[in-house]
Image (cartoon, rainbow, N blue to C red; front, side, top):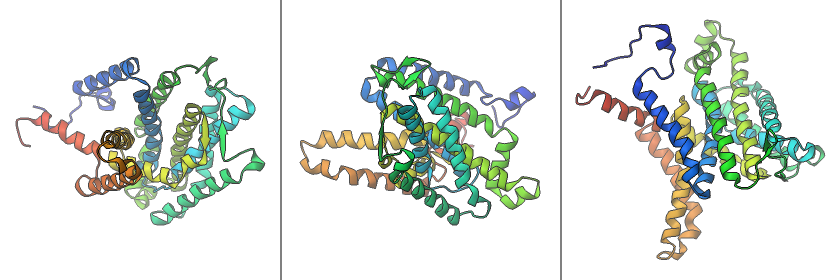
Length: 350
């Protein structure tokens, strides 16, 4: 019986999925992702696309908060930068999506690095307040950006929403599913390998003990800025995908509530875990959908329930965060790890 992790060669030691049960699970997930859009209706495709975009943004925030230990309450603002950057390039310059998305992501990374400058001197609550200020500054610019050609909302034409000349017209949910899931897969592969590199290990060292990291030669200023830029890049990617998928962008989609929502995703899913960010995105996206369907089912019996639905959703968010912090601070990923350990060690208790 396996009672530890033992590797006999370098390739096995460096493998992301060294054991056959892990590889089987990956194959099953790939089959499910490939088969899902052929059987799902537009409602479930819309939910899947929303989860995919949220997972990309949550992974980006987890790089900064979960892996580097830099608290951020401005993630919604960086999503807005990516969305409006892609929207302006598409609406004003008529650029296709395969150009606007990477350009908007890189621009958001630069903006994130600028707002990450205070991280050289601040940490903890003070850094959180600085990122909150970044959120408010970005939203203010979007509200007063007429000189820059930015309005309170922006509409994109479907002619600019294409992939290598193929317009995303018709069943946009089905078409965008492949773009969003492809972006999510690339994000997962990149971030999973990032923390096997020198930069990724420096992020983790800063999180664990920044003074000790500096003693062993980690340049705190450089790597903190790099963490902010990398996190903002994926926020910009998620924002740009949102812009093209929804077609209409408004600053109201990227308020402080959005930043809190993404913090809730990585707390509930599991800090410092790529899969935890995905689990959190699934949980926090499906929760309001489940409550909405429940309210619709009970509307005949309790007619007033629809008027209380927004308050029910907010209460459910807060209750979920509190319960996870009390009973499972490491999130859904730890619960899943416990299930795997139980079956791996069964029938023995330890």
